[in-house]
Length: 198
Image (tube, rainbow, N blue to C red):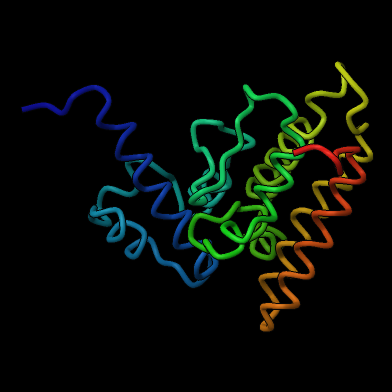
């Protein structure tokens, strides 16, 4: 009996989600194709029907809320609602939230995989750049309607969010990690002109 037409897309999505979680937790080099497929409930033999290589899968694993709103954020209790307006401060607060900090497996790939991307090929770097560009565009979304951040400010806000989370995650002392996240959040909100907005 043949599979339904949507089966291929569903399997591909399972593989990507499995890879995202494992790459976020262990890094690109420490994860094998066998581990990715086993975590997806599949066998290694099917991998190459969906991806030419682990590197190609890695580039696709860079998908995130900013490049694909269907991904959503998966941080429990944290919601970014683009229909609610004022998306910039929502992004900053969600990105630097304690929930995002604690959820390594469902972390934004720009935080969890930045070191791996720096050592990777052009395809992974382009995927990372696409995610960063999309984040900056989201941060600038309301600029046309009000005094939202210009491109330079949006880039700086993105750097504060991503870099703040990288530093917080690298800290062994939770109080320092919280201080870093809170300082990055306050600075990013002030830079965007959102400090008083909730």
